[in-house]
Image 1 (tube, helix red, strand yellow):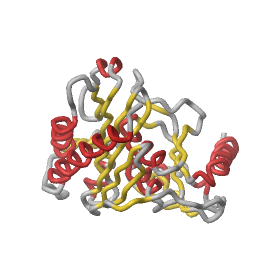
Image 2 (cartoon, rainbow, N blue to C red):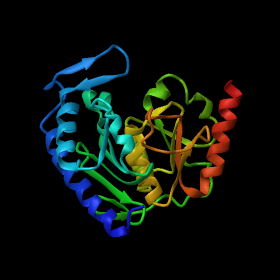
Image 3 (cartoon, helix red, strand yellow):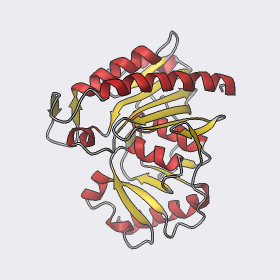
Length: 267
């Protein structure tokens, strides 16, 4: 695993890359770029592709692997100890619709573990950075996970798409405060910074959706894991993981119990 000084060097690289990518994103406003929509929930924009190019140029060094939503999967990454796992624009639909709940997401994976990450939301001017031995900063200031010890009244960030499908109706009378939001990376970042108590998704997610956010939550002292108890390992041959939960440590067990009970009740 990386030493703390090495992690700080990587964080500097991540911060520089996010700054360069943010400059690209800020050149665009809804309606000023080309969009390809397959009619479902998947939207690809000119912005995604340009940001991906900038991130790759800023981050990738010899001997490192690369996994990005916008690039063909180069399986040579499987032979690399160090892999960048990035989503150039997580929450593309929100970006296209002018909803400020998207972010640029950069995760650093070493031997399958998300050890460092950074996300930025240029529309709200938010920057989240963190590494396992370095803690987390929010806009340059130290940030910490929520200290909540009771799930009742907890602020839980929900996928806006899952809520629209009705998947979160099962949690409406459970005593939590549900706040729908777009990008999963952005939701994880806000939990890491103590701006919410928990988030979970009932849908499978690709590694690029969650690698940076998982690194941030763990770096802040939170808990991340699969809601199906699958191994949370990155740089897989098939880079997709089952549903994920991230919470303050004091409510982790309660949250998993609630998720498990409600899913079983609906099955």
